[in-house]
Structures are given as structure tokens and as C-alpha cells.
Length: 127
Image 1 (cartoon, rainbow, N blue to C red):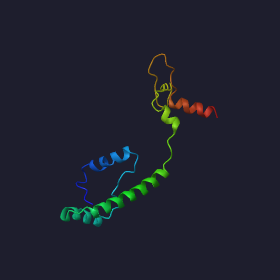
Image 2: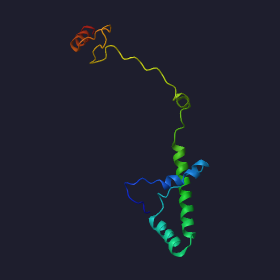
Image 3: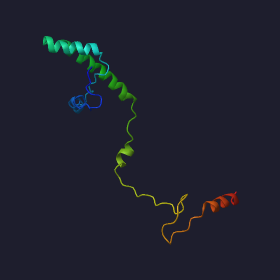
Image 4: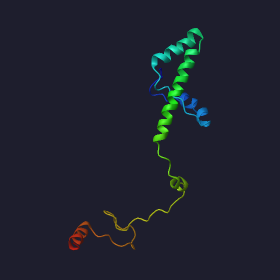
């Protein structure tokens, strides 16, 4: 099936699925349509003004898309209702630890952070 320039985003095909999705129908995909069947159907429209073959290809592609959509939908995990309910809440950010590894105190009133050697000595002494 002709796809145009590979670096150009295709908008018409996803946009064509908007009415289907709004009515809770399966989206249409031409991924599995054999190229020869698609080309023959398009030639039938352009050269013979006959849409019968294109209609058959369209119906076949839509039935195939529905089968794949249902199979994918059955594999999906249902969304976590707890996370959906509380995903927009703003939670307070935790305060930074005063003596994180490799940090130094930023204010004069903050406790002093032990140096790496002091932490190593304490680790040995505490064992």
C-alpha cells in the first residue's frame, strides 16, 4: 500500500478512525491487507469506476481489524481505579535529607554532614 514519504506524519488514517472510536467501534487498519489486493481494488475504482472490489477489501480489512482489536483489548490490564482517582492530586514534596551522600549543608543552621572518611570510620566502628 503506498504510504508516501516515510518522514511525513500521516494524519488522514488516524483521523479516519475518529468517527469509529467516537461510536465505540473498532478502529480500521490496513496493515494486513495484501498490497496486490489493495492495488487491484484501487485500479478497479480509478479505471473501471467500480467500487465492488474496494468494498470487499475494506470489509475484509475491517473484520480483520476488529479481530485484532478484540485480541489486544483482552490482553490489556484494566486501569488501576485508585491511581486514576488520585492522579491529579498534588502531594507535598519530601524535604531533602540534610546529609545526603556527597552533599554539603546549604544554611549555617543545618547540621554538618560528616565527610566520606568519617562515614567510613563510623561504618567500621559500628560493626
